[in-house]
Image 1 (cartoon, rainbow, N blue to C red):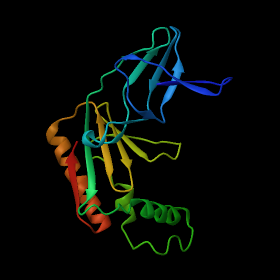
Image 2: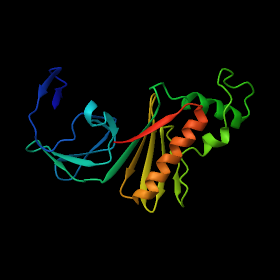
Image 3: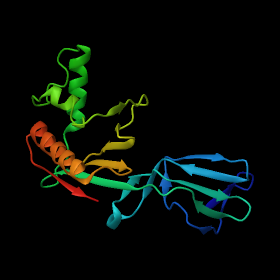
Length: 198
């Protein structure tokens, strides 16, 4: 951890103790009423052997008096990664842009996007069980659902789609659901997808 002195225009290394979040970015930080900083959200780099750069669902506190970290939450999570067999880039982004032009009535759209099933794209991640869809109004890359009070987050990257389940759902339900998503992706893109539990 580093502190920046604006007057001197220099960084100073600060030694901390406790359980820190690690390399975190795009997070929220706020001062609490006990001389500490609460850190939550964003993404944490877990390293290539542990899933890489993943969305953070836990909360940490940094005590500004003794520079000690404390982890405040321990979320139970399951993660599944969907990738095209062979490692090619996913084609969801151009399809989503083409679908948006269809839905708003712009003629022509993205003419170089091959034909695809727009309705399948619209329901790509819809769970086959009762659920609530959560709409993000910030144009983020996430799609979220809630099943039985458990949040599910989808993050679309260039080469993969990551499903994070923050909590626990029956394993048979999750197995059927992730296999259905894999099959929908395969049908939508005309290329086989594989899914791996992380």
